[in-house]
Every structure is written in structure tokens, then in C-alpha cells.
Length: 112
Image: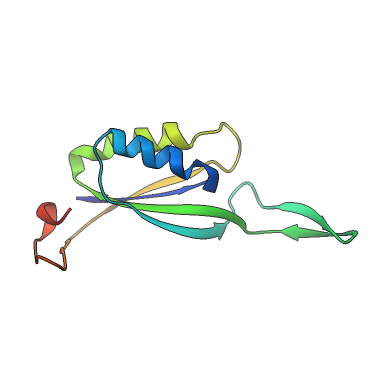
């Protein structure tokens, strides 16, 4: 089992959600986050004064899935989230040691 974590641009959330639904992946956690990478923020003008915006708004997606679905899931996220511009985001994949569904007590693959 894997946990796929993707950091994407906020306006791409609906496209990514639709793309992963099309491949049959169910279950998704979305968190609004802020951060920067190579993009390094940008300069804005407010009341005549320039200031640096270091942290840009992003959306973090967390999806628990079976090992055999990881490659299709990554491809779907990558295709749907890509704008071809800097700041499109990153995808991280983590190993899941254990999963428990609280309501039923099901574990691991049954809990996903």
C-alpha cells in the first residue's frame, strides 16, 4: 500500500479530482497549503509599495492506494495538473505500513 501525496495549483483541483475518478480511485484528502520551490514567490504592489510574497497558495492531495494502482494514479495526476509552467507541483509516494477503517475495524487493503 502507498500514500500518494501531490502538491498542485489550486485551480487544477477539479481537473485532478475528475482524472482520478475516471481511473476508479476513490477517497481523497485535500488540504489548502502554502509554500514555494523554484518558483520562489512573486512581487506584488499594495498601496504603492512593493512587497515580496514568499509563500504561494497550493493544494495538497493525499490518496491511499494499492501498489498496483500507483503508476496509473501518478500518470492521471501528472496529466491533469500540468500547465507546463513553473510551480505545477510535485508528487511524493510513501509506503503505508498499516491502514485501519475506524468505523468497521477493517485493516490494510480492505480499509482502502
